[in-house]
Amino acid sequence: MLLTRRSTFDPGGRLSRVAGLRVDVRSLNLAPAEFRYRATRGALVFSRGTEASFDFQDRTWAGYFDLEPFIQDSLNDLL
Image (cartoon, rainbow, N blue to C red):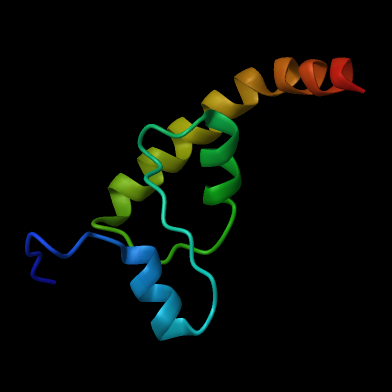
């Protein structure tokens, strides 16, 4: 995709038009642990490398399960 000064990078908008569905594209690198965990539970759509994907998923799940009790406590406090 060629970007000009008038164009913007909007992969979600482009995918939405092609798929005919609402598509939300987000970077997982800096996303919160719970979001990364939930995103990696789904089907992998794109990967630059299998080993890198498995490493990312392993780090994500380990981090999430370390934080999960605190997340649950926080949610319970809200109720």
